[in-house]
Length: 249
Image 1 (cartoon, rainbow, N blue to C red):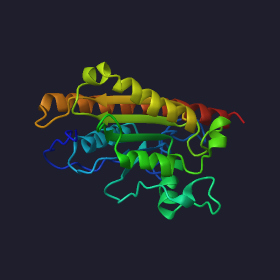
Image 2: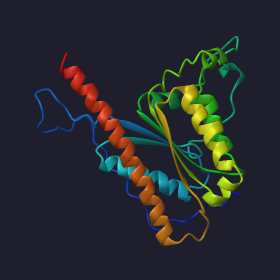
Image 3: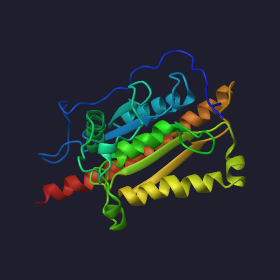
Image 4: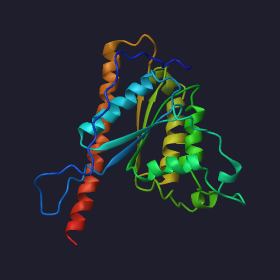
């Protein structure tokens, strides 16, 4: 069911970013643009660099940049991410410690206010590399005791959780067989509650098969952009409230 591979035409320009050094005009004395320090982490889990998942990730990142916020994309296959959880990475291990590659990925997680996973649905489930990313990175060091005690993952607590997924099957087909409900309950909502995300938003793109009509491809990419703008708006409002609270001190 690995049938969401769709060729792209042309090259993708690098999405512009704003740096902390850029001046911001107007506003109260000492007030800066709250958007410039907001970072989105986009994690892609598809082995083909020309997949539609990559097109979706790019569209999402471009919309984030247009909103004046920043994004970092981690292409798990491109960086050679190892999805296999190591014995010493389990929180109950006698010699518990996180591997250097996990620490690297966690640095991006900690620096971001939104975590977006982009991946295909294969055989009714996320790819193994995405599950491995959850096991090793998002769930790093989180013990069953912490889960039972409703203790959130510190690096993720209060952050936005976004899932952008594709499938060769249509959404009605997934829904009729109970797969959509199962995915939302067993993956999205479970991770939202267990890891301490503020919310989980899932945008699914069904019937992604080659050849894909240009009109439908454009529609899907527009939906990805709209989802990005919605998340940017949420994060902007949160950052603005935080900024106003600091100014009142």
